[in-house]
Length: 193
Image 1 (cartoon, rainbow, N blue to C red):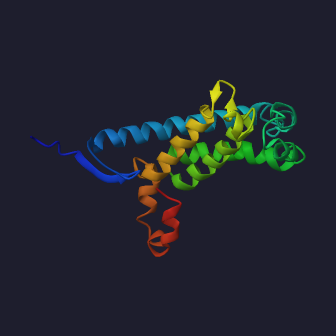
Image 2 (tube, rainbow, N blue to C red; image 1 turned 30 degrees about the vertical axis):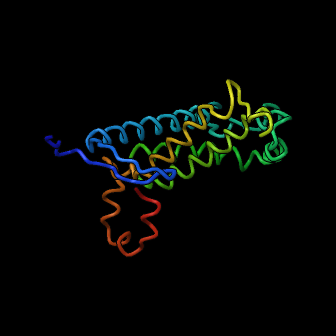
Image 3 (spheres, helix red, strand yellow; image 1 turned 180 degrees about the horizontal axis):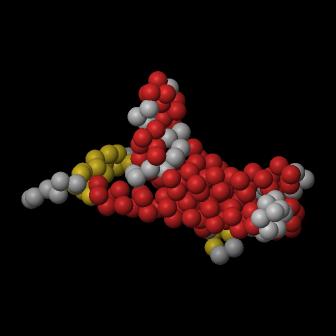
């Protein structure tokens, strides 16, 4: 059987089972780049919409306070945490807006992708838990089903982008990892990739 020069074989153990399959490095590269750009768009669009809500002259006119006080279901086990967050819109709102924009830019240019994926994943984790309409015993219902909603999917996509080091695929992380400062500070490599 002829082997494609860009083809590889993955042999690993997952959940106690041996897993082995062939894959194309080329298509993995394209898929990582595509997913990274799509997630960049998701974050940039969300952040820029919030930023422009009050016009460009008032970038922090958007407020999470109404959502935090009224949209999180009372049966949500974390309801108290989100109503507590509502007391601090001067901290929460800029973190959400600027965080979404910076995460989007980092993903778009492939810079500090693991750190951006971690921060984006943390934001998605908060959004996902805010969507719970009840607790574990009720099956963690969300608006259109149980457990899984779009924020949960985004969380998993971000995990994949960070795990695969998607910033190295047509991104600045590949160049940054070659610099002397990163070579001399291996902990920085944890943020890149």
